[in-house]
Amino acid sequence: MTKPPSTSASATPAATTSSEPSAADLAQRLDLVLSAGQEAAAITLRYFRQDNYQVELKADASPVTVADREAEQHLRRRIAASFPDDAVLGEEFDSVDGTSGFRWILDPIDGTKSFVHGVPFYGTMIGVEHAGRSVIGVVLLPGLDEHVYAVRGQGAWAVRGQESPKRAHVSDCRQMSQALFLTTAVKDFDKFGRGEAYEALDAATRISRTWGDCYGYLLVATGRAEVMVDPAMNVWDAAALQPILEEAGGTFTNWLGEPTIHGREGVATNGHLLDDVIAITRRAPRLP
Image (cartoon, rainbow, N blue to C red; front, top):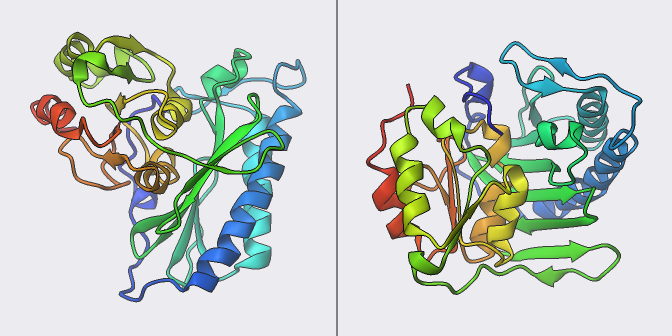
């Protein structure tokens, strides 16, 4: 999640439609999100903390492995078999156009740097977008055996191991001075000319940590942290997060406080602290 934001056409929203998705459409896709997501996450575990793969560097110098590619290919096969008219955008392969108004947005391993170092804070992320709006999201943490999912209007749900789903809720913290602030990589703020924003957030909050990538956002959604900010994101980093955070009672926005997965940056809060955080981030230079 620390890569420069994409500006390619593949990162733009699918063609929009004014109609709202039906409950049946959402339920059918949620079933596939959860089942295929678990299967893809299991694929990553076949390589996690093993010596059966090599790490390659992509054009932007971010790492990729056979686990990333196998997991995404599996998701694409499952989507094509069940919803051949849906569009697909993934991190590792070319986008697929669709006609249904739905687009699946895939990040097979979010936090590949954690993955290759044997740190279990990586996740498999699936978002489903309709009419330019993310309506379903799941983030699975295979190394921790937990996941969180949400459907717009139906709440966010956290699952640990074989336990039954429990409602995910953000914290009730209402003071920045008591908040836990997370990010993925501190040096990325300077990389994108936003170092002053990091310093201000760090000074305003009680604790700051780099428990980053998707794991940090789930800590906000489940009430274990209050603020997560990244200075640059791609749409596949964000698509699964917005419905989860909003259904958990929090917010996911760009640095101006606008709720979007297409802002090329990310701010997650417990809702109570949104204005305080945006007062800092909105002063930062805009991304080119």
